[in-house]
Amino acid sequence: YRKSLSSLSVPIGVAGSVIADGDVVGSDINIERIGPQSTVIIGYGVSEVTYEAREGQTLGFGNFELTIPDTFNPGHDRRHNLLVLGKRSIRGWTGIANFRLGSGLPFTRVRGFFNALTVNPTSDSYRDEVGRVVSLQGTPFTGRTPAYHQLDLSLEKRFTLGIGEAVFQVSVLNAYDR
Image (cartoon, rainbow, N blue to C red):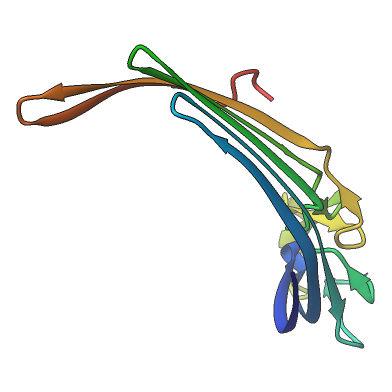
């Protein structure tokens, strides 16, 4: 697939937002095996999201100016995504395992922090002011988080009652706490 995007308002942390145009390209593949007592589904997707900031945009906070790169990958640009789902039924009980693996996402690194003070030229009140902590951001979206993976497990049993059906289910989300 391919999609062109235009006139997007892209938030850049606490500094504000910029106007950008973008392209999304990618591909997905799914393999399924569905049987009477078991199901296996494997899905893989690869994509790239690239934004191009319109010329002449800078953001700032006070005396600090943030330069926006000409092209960048926004915070939702997950390049690789793998899903493996397995389902097995035995004697009325159904077990499900769902594994997800995704590559890291772009983020903006923080350069540091400083205290911002409100200075009133006609008063010395700023001398006693604590100020508010402000983060000094780096170049937007130049960092990338580590890969993400998670395993969810569940076990369920369906019961037929006189007035309908009931389901008993136990689930463990993020089974190995990653």
